[in-house]
Image 1 (tube, rainbow, N blue to C red):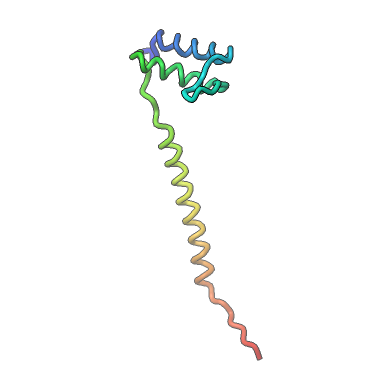
Image 2: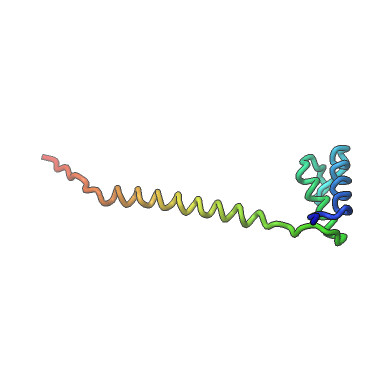
Length: 96
């Protein structure tokens, strides 16, 4: 079973062609130079017309979740270092 319809393939092909010619603009009006962005624009246009396209993935939340996990592990290791330094007895030096 195909993930994308022929109409959506045409939209992506058209947006890639426009990007290569330097005619494709993003929503802010700037020229698109990244092929991935051109594909995203083509798929977005296909979705807007109701063509068969898989649902938009929520990649932002996935990447932020990975970052949060790494922050947690970093803070745990730094906390254990702090605990170790606190638990070790410090020598008192007295001046004579």
